[in-house]
Every structure is written in structure tokens, then in C-alpha cells.
Length: 188
Image 1 (tube, rainbow, N blue to C red):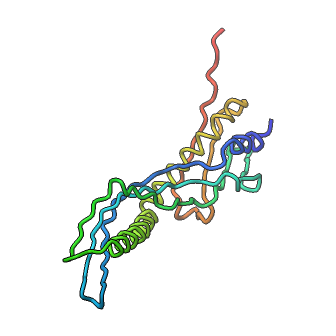
Image 2 (cartoon, one colour):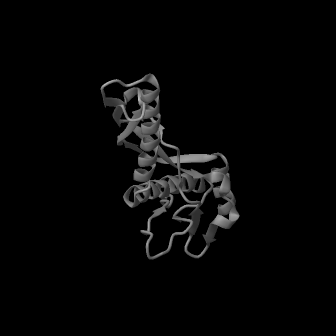
Image 3 (tube, rainbow, N blue to C red):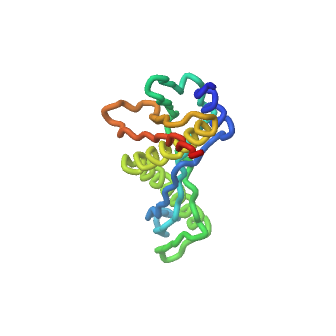
């Protein structure tokens, strides 16, 4: 009988939901100088990276849900999307090194510096407005499905699920709703 309670149960079964994944291939470069500048070296690297966008459902409680009996609308306010630390695939990385003689220490420093730069660039790219909106749209769709199915199973048919995020305003958030289909009349 309680649509909000039914919805909360569907969230309790999931702690975190990955709703979108983006892959990048940052091209990065770093330089190294040894022996008072006598040995100069440079490394250029292309390091594939993956960033996951997720929702932390442990933050979901009754204060984030609204039920409008009159319009049969479930409102859901999600916490902001979280981005994972970039997962660098160094096994597929490609390196180009320049220098007359590159010491093992210089090579290690160059690789470490390029890894740090690639992580920063992948995360910066992942935060682009276009990718963030794609991830939000994917999250809205996934959450709507995760809510509509248990509600329909609990007997709530023909409802609308309106999903928003912390910080959304009605002027900037595209209206995206899902509606459960009313049960078809059974012929006797």
C-alpha cells in the first residue's frame, strides 16, 4: 500500500549503481632532465582510460521521495553523480621516448608523471557538460525502470516517475518521466 516504502525497498537492494561509462585516450607528455641538464629526455604517451559515473543509493531515504496521490506521480531526487578514479589501461598504452640516453630512473619518472597527467585529463574530460548530461539521462532512465517495475508489481499501475538530481532547477533540467502502463482489461 505505500508507494514510497516500495520504492525505498528497491533502493535498499542496491548500494551503488553505475549508470554510465566513458572511455578516453589522453595523449600526454612529460620531460626529464638529469646531470645538470646534460641528459634531456621526453616521453609521449597515449594511455586508454575509463571513468564510471555512479549513484550512491545509501543516501536515499524518505526525504528524497515524494508521492502525489492526485497525479499518481512519484518524485525522486537523486544525489549528485559520482565519478570514479580513472581506470588507466597501461597494458594498452603506447609510449614514444626521445633522448640520447634515458636512465631507468628517468624512464620511471616520465611514466609516473604521464600517468598522473593522464588521470587528470581523463577526469577533466569526464566532467564535460555533454558527458555529464548523458550520464544524468542514463541515470534517470535506469532509476525510472528500477522504480516502475517494483511499483507495478505492488499494484501501482499508470504512475509517473519524475527523476531529478540534487541541484537541478526546473529551468535547466530536461523533463524526463516514465509512466507505468495501466493493466490491460482481462477478457472473460
